[in-house]
Amino acid sequence: MLKVAITKTLKHFQLNAEFAVGTGITGIIGPSGCGKSVTLQCLAGLQNPDHGEILLNGQPLYQSNNRTNIKSRNRNIGYVFQNYALFPHLTVEKNIEYGLKGKKNSLEKKQIVSNMIEKVQLVGYEEHYPSQLSGGQQQRVALARTLVTDPDLLLLDEPFSALDHHVKHILEQELLNILRENYSGIVLLVTHNMEEAYRLCDHLILYDNGVIIQSGKKEEIFKKPVNISAAKIIGCKNILPVNSIKETTGHLECQVQGIKLRLLKQTIPFKATHIGIYSENIRFTKHATHSDNLFQFTITEMVKGIHQTNITLLIENTFSIVASISNHEVDSLIKENYKVELSPSFIFLLENR
Image 1: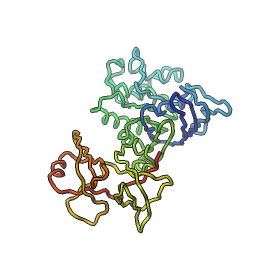
Image 2: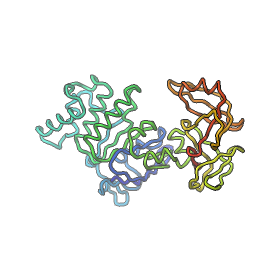
Image 3: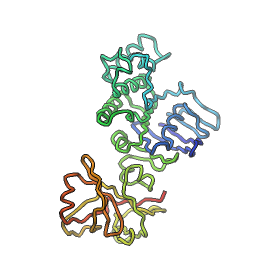
Image 4: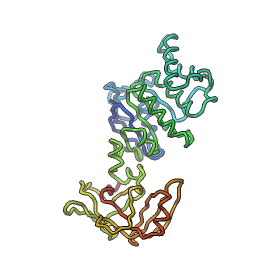
């Protein structure tokens, strides 16, 4: 178990990180410059917090109240940097072996390194230098160099940011397989890519301007972000201010610029001022039904991607939302008489922060 409660004054904000995580992969997600990487550096002992404590499996790594500050090399923490930080003058074998410097005898080192090279599928590349490797191979070397030390905590700082888009998914799966088969400890993965975080992580910690705004299981966070900042971080394009919220029989009712919307019955946050709905959860129907939240709309803008089109809709000449639909549905939507459906089950309440 990793327990963190630290503060650190930075140039543009104060980092205030407090969380506890167990085994498995936990993602730290947030916009660039919000304190994610600084948190990892404090955990690894590369930077010092101003106040607080860091406990790893019950052992204090840092405590400001009694001036405990274990040296980085003695924390048994593995750190894979964004640029992998491989030694350009060392071969694959020697780079991996460097992680064992001063810890094993020569025979043990050779056997451990050989086993790890096989596990990360780099057999045949032992004598290659980093400049002779692909980005994915360099990543595996960096990961292997860390895993041979059998760390209690593994820190991954945006490990896919330097890779081409078309290989990211393959390497994500490779990373998952390597970790599942070779590591049973705690993993913290920093990213600002929400899809990457969802694919790789079990739990998420959302950062904004140095503050943790939400944490928990990834499914729960994506289903119900607690506030506007969290909703934006995880990719919600439709965040609308509400004029009023009231409870009625079996559901909630809110008004957005005079338009009534029904929501599923849920706890109303104390400072709820907005609603959110993912663009992917907006539906269209040609048939008049008794469904809630069916509206006339006008298309005001379309942005076509490779597979999806983002369509801006003006609802009842009042407010705008963005819907994401597959490209093959666009022509039908334009030519035929559809209504838009904002299903109550997909609308969530948000606090204004």
